[in-house]
Amino acid sequence: MTLTILYKKFMKEMAERPRMRHLAQLRDGAFALAFLSLLLCDIRLVAQAVSQSSALHGSLIVAGSALLGWIVADLASGAIHFVADNFGRPETPLLGPLLIAPFREHHVSPLNLLKHGFLERNANNSLIALPLLGWIPFTDLGSNWVLFLGCVSLQMAGWVAVTNEIHAAAHASSVPGWVKALQDHGVILSPEHHQAHHSSPTVGSELSGFHYCITSGACDRLAQALRLPVTTRHAR
Image (cartoon, rainbow, N blue to C red; front, side, top):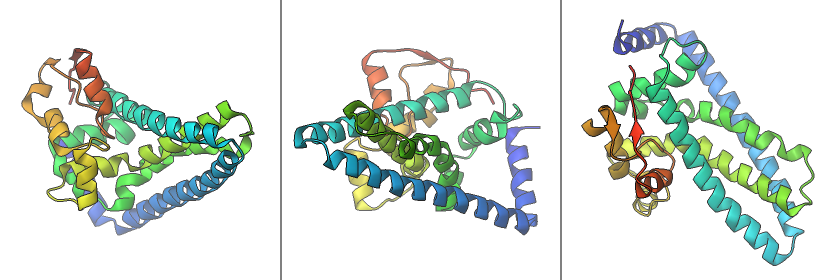
């Protein structure tokens, strides 16, 4: 049974069982609420700790963590995407339905990502980001290095939580002007950069470049600059 048939069967069952849809919406809302509550708590704690540092140290911590959190989140998105596209199967226990199947389905029907609602698109990533936020309230942020790590975790959590929304924007036919500006300046994934992932050269046995990062694509560009070859299987 192909992935397309499995996906259509699943969507048909969901359409015929409205209670399942409602439960899924409640689950997504709970994930988002937990993430937002913890995020706001951590922002308050980190902001308070930064304000108690010297102006120089505080500025360096905020600027350095913003850059590192952005880069590491993009690197993580590329690593997870690469593994999900090329290893295991949708039937693989636990990781199959949660991680592998959605990425494989995306290659079959890329625009289906746009049919999901905001919560449905981003709730799972909010859940994934919770560990990045969960340790901050239970640690002493008095040390500059611990504070720096806390800021990096906070930045990473924010980028991880919105990565699917960024990915969806790269497939959208139109986006708000400020989103387009971020895409054009490479802050978030652009349609032009991501299109290489869905074009025919990426389906072969060898890639001329790495096109898996879906937060900003910055780490893709780094891999390409270093001329790193990537062998892929794009298992189905």
